[in-house]
Length: 589
Ligand code: CMP
Image (cartoon, rainbow, N blue to C red):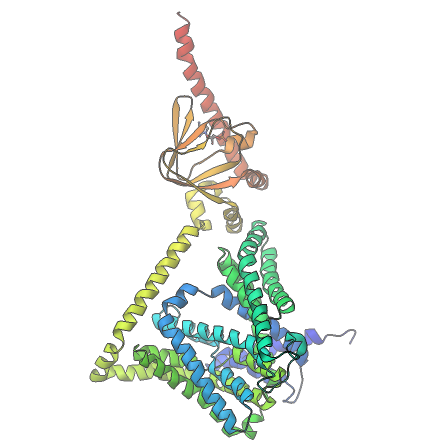
């Protein structure tokens, strides 16, 4: 071969096989994720045939994790989480504690160390957000109260795991593993110092991102979006995600995953977050697939034959143990059985966080190789079984509903708590909608409906134009423009009414009209006073953007120039008419 094509081969084989196996999985009515994992097994070192470069695959997988966590951050809603907190927070924490304890007990029975048990237990206790969201989407349950409880529950789990990801390396040595000195420098310090250093680094990171991020990142994104170049925008989103992830790992020693999660969370607040999410999604999808393939590569299938009892115990803990614990907690907190069944089914699998945790456990010498294989076997099997678990929980609900006595008990139990939760969710939704409405820019369609002037623009061009607009408002009586002033912006009236004073004449302009263009076009001072006569809202374009737009869109320039000529002529007539009677009156005298 003329040159080294290992990277190309790894990506190509990863994509091709993931596509083939993913398709086969959906044919068998399994989540495609199972196919991606199996594609990884096929190109892994444990099976015959082509073996992909596992180091390269691991790096590609890391990009997948960064983009996945960036996506989780982009969609993270604190308000939604707060609405379901009464159930999700104690539920998730209790469930993690119980499931981890069972995992530790199980591992110690096998003769493993406490540290190994802890990593195993934690890995088995956390479900996969990717798998859950896909399952809820398929069942149209994402927006239902039960679906939102399950998502909230998982977000709490994710946050707990973020904490575990930070703490594990710091505690590795104490737990019986080895310290990887360059990552945290903890080898030569005591536990307390190591923990303090870790917390100081994480706090410095969080403070930097939360203080600097919201001021800089949305501004940068807006600037780039205003250029109207789609690829530049996508590039900027990726640069932010990967840049912050890598930068935070290098500067503060925190994981890529944490850095990317915060990068997403910071952008979440920006009005461009939807666009950012949409643009990064294809790449996120592609690299997430490579992440699953690379995880599959680590899986040694012989574990199924060598340690069937251990595999079965792991699987039972994930599918049955965790479900029962979750169901028990939901009922204990006095919420309905249907909520409990939905949450249990949602959590009866493990995924990306488990792999990340297991990877760290392995790197720090906490988890034996066998542990990783067991976790992978548990993941592949539980994800495969997940659709079945969901349909079982649905059937259980139907079966209970079919029995009048149990139905009554079923609908009565936890009804009050559920109603309160539903109310909080509704309030959260209304608040979110109000907030969105406040910040809401026009959609390209609304813009054209309101301002026919922009009909000739393509939707993309309209979108960019919307980004250039600033918002302004005025109360009745406010002077918006003063005759003779220097021009700075043009105003498009989105609602309300203003009055233009030309001599003694008053001209009314309403929603859909615009003003302030004459001075900008002629380069002269403002020609008239403009005063609001109603509560009015405007979209304004500053001088530079307005001129830039006129240059780029000659059709709009022509229309506006025609109106300027018309207004100038009208004003001339008005002034002449006003002057005429006076001079006429003076003449006889
Ligand atoms: P400008 O001169 O920049 O500032 C005052 C604005 O009032 C002016 O731009 C026009 O947009 C508006 N204006 C002036 N004359 C008329 C008119 N005859 N009819 C409607 N609007 C006008």
